[in-house]
Image (cartoon, rainbow, N blue to C red; front, side):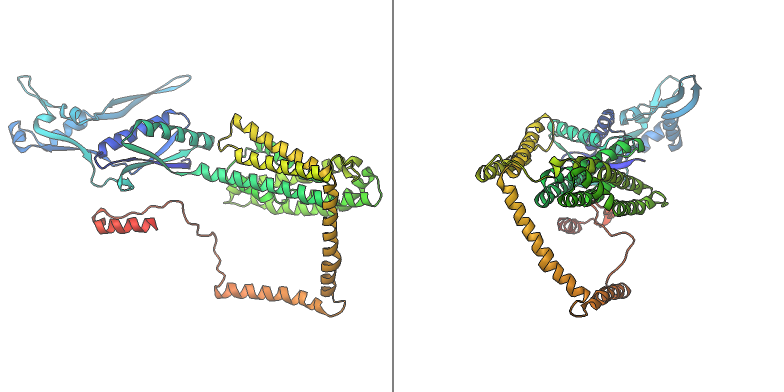
Length: 512
């Protein structure tokens, strides 16, 4: 059994549509979807079970001197679907089947019951009425109060969920245009959850890049912050290369790992870059600052990253959590490439004086730089709103606006007096936080004037006791897995209890 991809349904638009017409059309839809080759596994739900009702007429039974058993034997003997053997070959095997099943009421009525001595042929239709109906114990479903049938679309491990989703949407559009009396609906689609995770990962990644560029650009410089931000795409690209050999796919588990790790990828790069910049400000050459700054923090940075790697590596060996191995692989691979980029690639780029120095030629005035920044922000926002929901060739123009906005905005900021003025304000703010606020707070806690340092022991102890007491008295409950509200549910009600009042109450309950 494959994993669930989608739940779809076909419903009638008016009450005059019979169950037979609905089921016949749904059977055709099932075959059409299977013929697309992108969909190979379909589970039917709410399909009434077809049943042929054979009502023997008493007068005709006496007239032809027949019995119930004779009718039953005649139908079963001439309605066969059995395997009779297997022919084995060098390249393939062939199965021999006898398929003589009847599928309509007319075909059953024409089954020969017996042949008289005079050559007259007596058929089932001569002694009985044959009608096509549905079993009383079969399932029935409705959508918005009208008859409906449902399908559960599943996929194998090698199938692409996006191709299946596109196939369903294309068929839905075609079906609704050609069948005015029926409606094709997609109730639930797993691909939407997957795309939501991808969008969340994209937003988090872009937010991380912007924050790194913004804050490091303010306190250090733009070029340095750009090389630090490069660690995010570099780590993901390296992870995807390794992932092709490991066999990972873009799924909910692997995307969760990417979302989890994107926030810690540049931590080591920020520490290394800031320390290199500090050594450069002390008067060292760019190359010497890159070497000394990297080697000074190398042990602590590597220890921090390797500790996280060891913590996630445990998931490879926990029985029953095999599905979490992809998350562990994604996280560990990204961290490995992140530390490699931080201790090798980043120092090599920061070893150039042009990256670290602040003495830049100011080509633009303050007013022109401000205008360029406004144009850059406007171009970036325009590209964001023009970005299509279904990217194709029309994505080139919004991407060009993105890049143009970034380039123009950075040029207006870094090549005008605006950068030095903003950086001076940022340095003054950091100096105030460090010298006035932070220094005073630390001096108070370490007990230079009073013995306030005792609070640093009793406050965490108080919180520990408080949380333990909450667990003991049940205020803070514990569970193995949270009770997450489902996207859909099944409600089974016996038919004899489905009176009109109960139906109205059920509709009100579902609406709320």
